[in-house]
Length: 176
Image 1 (cartoon, rainbow, N blue to C red):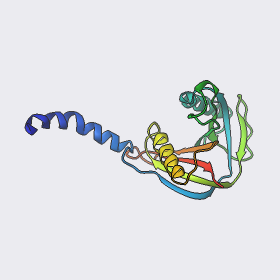
Image 2: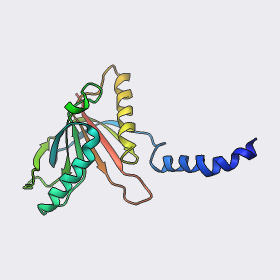
Image 3: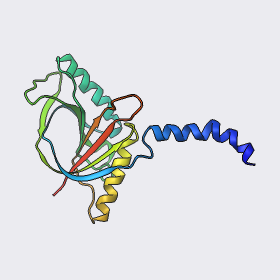
Image 4: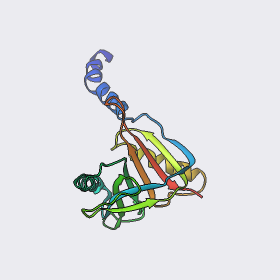
């Protein structure tokens, strides 16, 4: 029986497990109370489905580069809790960190998030997998303390240093 399953396991299951591991599927999230910011960022704002935020980030990058600025670390600010707000009504910003004295055009706006106390969740995983792992860990952590996620949250995704590793997602929620 096992001899019949071995080729299937080696050909199909093992590659899937290895890819999931490479994407960071087995990595755990690290949560800590810390001070974060300030962050100055150039952004585009969107009202609608969060699934379209990667497209918005591409437009923000193009607008920055057209204005002669290089895009720093990607940043997303989510204002609407997806558990409570219907997709067409969700509000978010997608953009990139920029120097504090930056001037932008092309529909971009600049804002600064001040330094503040946050609950920070970090997970090293692929950009499609990391948010679900981070928010699940954050939700569990807060539920253990009788609390829930409150918005806005700030997401920063630092790309990997090499192709063999995944980037690092940090999700920050103001913590009092």
